Image (cartoon, rainbow, N blue to C red; front, side, top):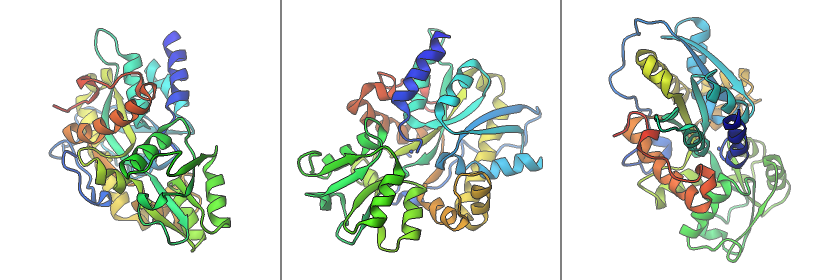
Length: 347
């Protein structure tokens, strides 16, 4: 019980990105889905795999798998449940009521650290499922790079959390000192940023998907000025800006390796379907309650940077990102950077 309560407390500090390769490509939109090896044949065992997902961009890549599971054509018996916040998921993961969970990247590190014992890890990172979903938007045409924010005021959410740490890190790498060269005003809700962008010419704001796409679709004078995922690659080429990580209970991974390989294969196929056919995936996004409008969903899918990075590619993408968060606030990743046994399947 104490461990569950402690983890729930950690969730408050770690709800950072849920809104949010060894040689990363120049264009993050060109990142391709990777699998841990040859596509396996269906496992001989039929296993019920309990999956907890979140109502946000990290779940969009899973929608093809969810469709196949409902139709009975998936490799295993996937029971996927979508939740509103990570603090609904973490206690179930700790208790063993969930086998696989899609979590904000930093929270995955927190849960790993808080549940690890002398016997080893209880929860491990299985894959990166979503890269960055944050963008700088402008009601105007003046901002073309982060350096153009000198002397400007930027609206954002996520004070004391991943959006703040990421934005301020990138501003510094662009030669700007937050609070001196650029003012960042933090507000509680993305809808406040969206409303200000729509109403006032000259406004600059940071929004996650799908809010960013919704604003640009509805307001033609508002545009994406800087994709922070690309901005990250430009200055941190050895890692990636990461939003979502898929974690697995270590006990499940050991007991059902075939079922876990099947899950990764079905997830890879799902991500490939969503990213290659946004027009076909958009109705599923709306049906799942993740976005209200199919046109917005279709436009937002490419900007969500959906991937499935496993093994060494997962570690390369994630390790540098967690290091930036740790430098900004150690508690955001559980107090210390995770060790080798966090990265399942990595060398």
